[in-house]
Length: 112
Image (tube, rainbow, N blue to C red):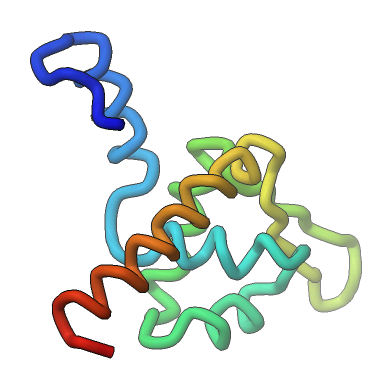
């Protein structure tokens, strides 16, 4: 159920959430990482259509919002792995609901 409009605290919290998750890629990256830690190339393969430049930018933003963690291992060359944080995992219900809404929306708009 949607909260009643006009509540400044509700508007602020929605605005904060949208800032952390804005754009077409961040939720898809989080979904890709929900299966476990991945390296940059693995994420790029799992998120179709994203460029390396955009992936790099979005990973930095997700890290700044504490939704993912970047681990650098002392190997040659250095190994970098990205992991979803517990804070990022707290979006599981949001991703599930978006998935179900997307299925219903596709059916209603496209008919498939």
